[in-house]
Length: 557
Image 1: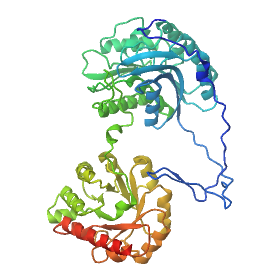
Image 2: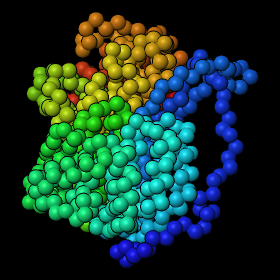
Image 3: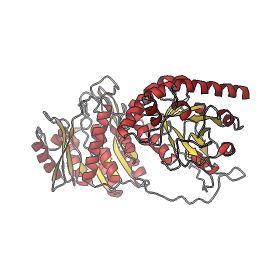
Image 4: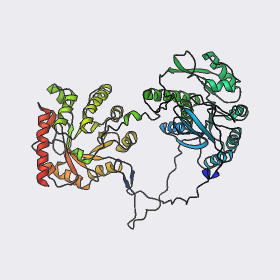
């Protein structure tokens, strides 16, 4: 089988696919009296145990259906397209994705160097393993390199019906390499398209399916969509990314009754490898979540556009087509972030825009002076700033903090922390729960929670916080109607807390030493506001306070 100089070799050594005979996983019934299963920068896992150390008994686990897409496609060693793109797209859209691999390719940003087709018998075995057990909602197909595999898939879908089938007729890679034998075209038309809820060809694939029809205009795409619809799929999306002389990225959707021209700005980038796989997988993911077909298509197109725009300047590989970032995270993972430590709480500076305005200081100047004076962590607090301005300020302050390895946390606003790539957030009892914040921010960001009671401190630990702020210890002018806990209340919470603690509320140079002297090993520092920011020289006040605290700790040790 000749194909652009590539070798199509089936796996001849069945040992490559020999099923592993694993021991059944041990399943423990559990009851939740106190349990915490959570990943943080310092992995903490807690399980509820009986007194003898055995797992507790009797939990009935309630089942919640998870949206599930099965992708049937080829593996891309460069991870830009194929199975790898499908997995990333579904994960990014919050959907579980299982896989059936039809071929293993050797490819990179320059092209496809080799293809090994998985034996159709083993493809059938993979399909049965997943479809018979895992409640698949939607099947998405990609690279189907042989007639036999198309037939296997058709039989499997008849035996195990699913809610929807998304067919991406992958025949040629983005780099121009042929991925499927042209002889399977007839099998596609006769056996697979009748089962498709949506067909998503690009211009080349649509032309191939229609016997070489020329597609050069949007009118041609509309005509092609209608002809393809007549072959059996319930809806068709003809993708016009390669449409000549088009300033927009225009796709044509046809459901048998109405045409929809879906347009978006064309993103100028080399990082387009895997766009077709990703679009189809995103459609499948949205269908699995219950979206209508047109809504799923529109959302998928917007998602790909967003990912391309974010990834347009990323450099991976030396070839003509690079991959893009499905999670919009690669540019944030340059290693410049600060890993939180409990010792960072030593001199915790909380900004106040009102005080800065009083002294005629920009926020960035106040933060820089605090750090130069010895502040070990900065909490950026903006109660009245517009969101756009808050994000800009956070980014500017982050540029100041990073060279000093000083963490920058955002007060309350998870959205601002995400948009600015800050090092974490500090939350109050009436703010977003720490557990939700952790799900949004990921395991690497720091989360602090204000607590007044032992119960609140314990809840913060269960929810995955990294530290707690306990107070107000003393009355403060920065928070109205703030109940104080005093030194005794602070000590009670500290001794009960499993997390490092920073004392907050009304602390200044005159009372900070007694706070640190309460005799609680996990009290790591004090938080200050007006003690440093409501002064003519932030740097001087911070330096003096830092020196005083350091001396007191040194004498105590």
